[in-house]
Image 1 (cartoon, one colour):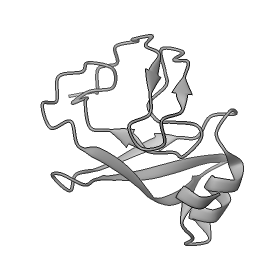
Image 2 (cartoon, one colour):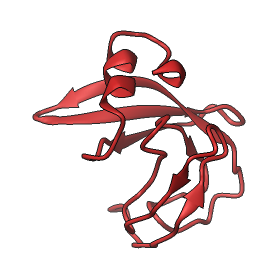
Image 3 (tube, helix red, strand yellow):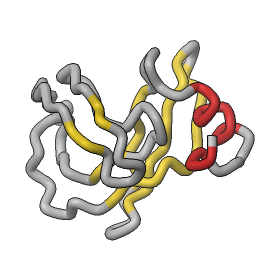
Length: 104
């Protein structure tokens, strides 16, 4: 069954670094620290009751795109999220090199 996508435009305050984030309807992580929250089953549906913090643990290249791998600190599930142009590229590069994106 193909993934369903629900566009949901929401502004939020990152629960990891307290940055104010302006949502676009496609925003799924904080562009400053790259952390996310485990709130979706399918992108944008907000139907996952886990609510754990999703730590950025790796970056993979998918063609020309960079994809952040997040791991939930509560349940351990891993999710893939594309980087976007306003992401902190120092944090992305640090994560690619195996560094700690939190301090970039």
